[in-house]
Length: 296
Image (cartoon, rainbow, N blue to C red):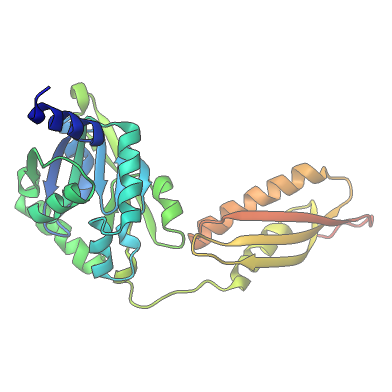
């Protein structure tokens, strides 16, 4: 084997990502790239998208965390470029695991997508699609207006996929129906709309008493629960951990009622606060054996 061929062999051996075909989808910030990302990927039979720090396969996040969580716009850009080794390694490992044939990288400029590909050890961009190729001037202007006036950003995955990353953020689902997908078949692309941290005018805090009041209201509506004797809330960046002790009324199946009560509490807290409840522990502290169950 010649020295040249040996070098090629060594590159193939140590860079398993070199055969991936890399596409770029480019447009200025707020012009609707993430909104159209899945449509563009579908047109080119691409199943993997890199957008704002996330590696997305079809409709699922498989690696990374959203750059839109960053506290400032500068930090958002750094995160999207995979500046730190930790951020790069997570994405690289996922790419090596899934072995995609093609990847679509979203960015605001040619330089940005080139830098992302370089940082991740991906081959050079083989094809570039610009936002003006797939959207009219009117559509681009409308997207910019929404970004400026409402501060809304789109992430090209369903709300349930991104919720774990955005506990307490304003999340809205968005469904887009496209008439032609792979093989000219129709498909629905579900996305999530968020308002990033750096666009908030100030901070908001949810008091522990809010969680208590929600739980107590649910308990009042539940004939199996006599009273809540203790509620403890431990907050974390990912979402709250809740511990409570309850007294149940005699005659009910304790295990079933506690399980159903936990499910109901979690569902209502998440619905009313947008917080992602990490865990709810309920201890049955006692049984009320009085004949007259509380009038609820």
